[in-house]
Length: 90
Image (tube, rainbow, N blue to C red; front, side, top):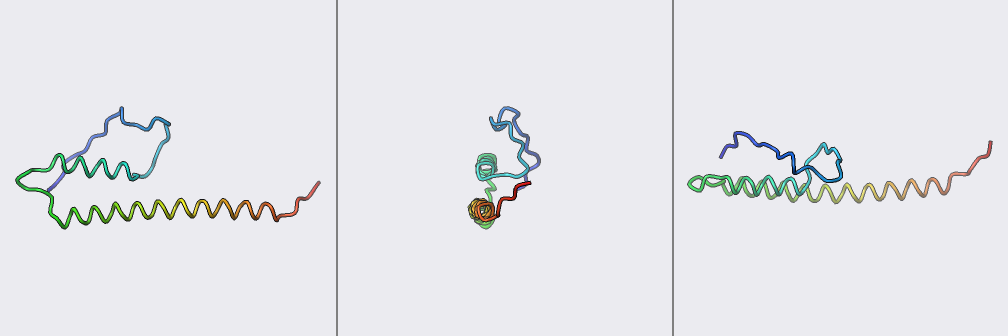
């Protein structure tokens, strides 16, 4: 199955007005469900393709979890370093 074009709805922008450079889990699910809705019933997506997409979703979820953990560890290390750094007065 080929997809010729995808258009974005201007009303679907995040409410926080944050510009994002990457797709997240919600975006991935939205794209996948749209693909499933728009597929030709006489020529559905191949099982191998669907499994590959689900694997990508699982990988994305894992990467986001690792990223959140690394950010938390970095913040804790920064706080520890700041607490151990002697304060100098000028």
